[in-house]
Amino acid sequence: MRWPAEAIWEAVAPGLSGFTVEILPELDSTNSELMRRARAGLREPLLLVAEKQTAGRGRMGRQWLSERGDSLTFSIGLALQPVSWSGLSLTVGVAVAEALPGSVGLKWPNDLWLGERKLGGILVETASFEPEPASRYAVIGVGLNIAPRDGQGLSTPPAAARELDPALDAPTCLGRIVPPLVQAILEFQRHGFAPFRARYEARDILRDREVTLSDGSSGSAHGVTDEGALLVHTAAGMRVVSSAEVSVRPAP
Image (cartoon, rainbow, N blue to C red):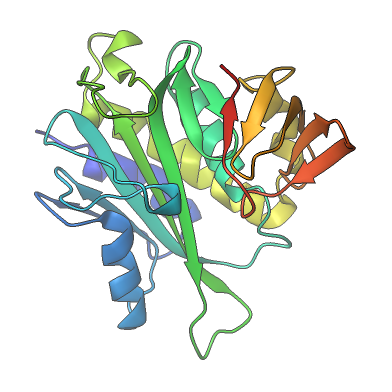
């Protein structure tokens, strides 16, 4: 595969000092690798792409399978100091969905959906390192299905980017996604999630739907707050749900 590494660097580097791009044939996990490097003191802004992941993971430790050409898996690592971290995964979702053709939906807090099927996922992890306690090193991982795949054993049927455009492949998607994604991350650092709220809600697949929370409660989803928390109207009243608390599924 021919990756647009130079074009991505030229688009991103002027606004993100020290930015580099690295493409590797195989890794256990791009998120895990960037965290290992950060612990070793390597914390410059970096886009790391793996053509194949052997131990990819999603939120709550869920496995993310990745084969060469069938998926796009990458992570961006950089030091951030936002006013608030709340809503970062939603901001990433907005940027990725808007970079793709068609009507890609967003399922709170970190999934990309096509209709009622999962197209991709986002995993944001952060860590603090001395001597820069004021900022945190953020690793923003994105996994996207490129080719149709077997949904056996998956809780949500999979969708594929080639359903949006048969010409889409992993390198093309990477080139479309990364420049606006980095721009969105830097805007989030300056202004938080609030400027992205309306753009998120325009693609919110849970809005006005009955949802079931992993803690056993249920209710009707009513959008998100300026901090990216989910609003769920339950029998006990309106509940503000943070992404750290529960996972959410549309009710059957």
